Amino acid sequence: MFAAENGLKGDPRLQAISEAIRVVPHFPKPGIMFQDITTLLLDHKAFKDTVDIFIDRYRDMGISVVAGVEARGFMFGPSIALAIGAKFVPLRKPRKLPGEVISEAYVLEYGTDCLEMHVGAVQPGERALVIDDLVATGGTLSAAIRLLERVGAEVVECACVIGLPEVKGQRRLNGKPLYILVEPRNIDNGY
View 1 (tube, helix red, strand yellow):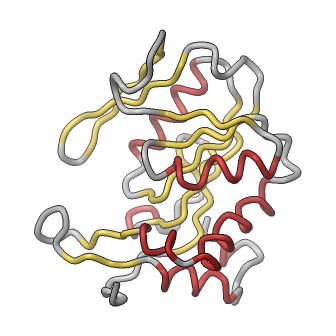
View 2 (view 1 turned 180 degrees about the horizontal axis):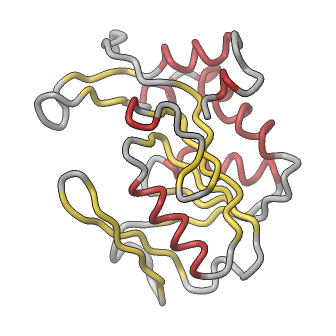
């Protein structure tokens, strides 16, 4: 569900967050309108508001794990984890973590990929939040859910800053609630 449908309708922070995200046409290939969150990170207030909205939502949900999807989930996840008293667990691309890992493969619109997590990073029964910058088809988040559930975690929700039109109206992903702050913009905001 979009934040505006869940108590934040008309919240000026959502518009500021949306406006802080640069749209790069035809990147990385023709026809793609790339949602560049690096400009959001440059805007202290919009970046803080983004993190604060997530903190307000998850503060009292008993979450003990914030799992960030590589790489942009790493930009939001640690701040949220610290603020709600949870640990941060990176979900990485293959061969990026030292030591023993557990892996989950998934299909992309243009191929396949894999997420990995350290064995022992998450314990059975822990309540987890999955965070990423953007959800398009849901393939990466679905892999993150499966990975966490394989080690016995209870995935409480998946959260993203941006939700592409493909997920509009979707309130769940693999049976888990999906929380999205803003819809994508279609024009370059000048950065």
